[in-house]
Image 1 (cartoon, rainbow, N blue to C red):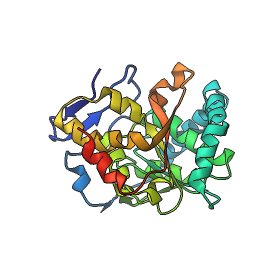
Image 2 (image 1 turned 120 degrees about the vertical axis):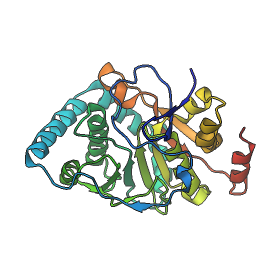
Image 3 (image 1 turned 60 degrees about the horizontal axis):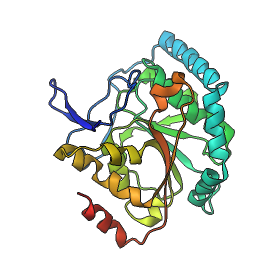
Image 4 (image 1 turned 60 degrees about the vertical axis):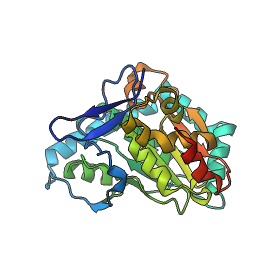
Length: 279
């Protein structure tokens, strides 16, 4: 099966989609990046939904409590923690931390936590990680252009900071950073890599998101797909990847084909060559 490029007839915009069985329960409505999305500038953002609805807010808080309790008592979460605490993965986090004591967690592309269960599971995992590990920073920074003001208010109540600028995932990792990006579009991973394409930045990144190995195995020869995945596939040579086991069908939609990614040592002068050699 190949990666595909889908066109939205209503706005003529494109997005690269990583194929997989069982894609039901995805994040729902999402702004689709244009082919030249990497050239767009970071822009201040405001939700179209300008008022907090107290009834919706209360219902959403209850939904999040249910999701977090379900995740916390699941075999999936037990396996998730065991992987994080395993010597091979915990050592990778120690390398990212270096002399620092905490990682800043940044979540891009979370989707609508009010409308869909998968984003609530993904957010639950991030919050539970913060509670479980003292090396995860106190404030989780979050952004998705689909978030309503009501959703943002609930996120804030859960210890998150909703960003006011759409960074297009181009944040430079000037300090140890955990980028939590499950099921984001390929160009957002590419933007992140491009913004940090030197070892003093890459070495400070832990990335949770779509499997880079899956991109490499399933990419098609469509020009749009090549442009979106070129840097991802180049990064495979310097990436240590640890796949997530979904364990239960309940969490397949939220976490299928997801992995932890860490970037191993390379010489800065080699990095441009890795990209130019691809395709």
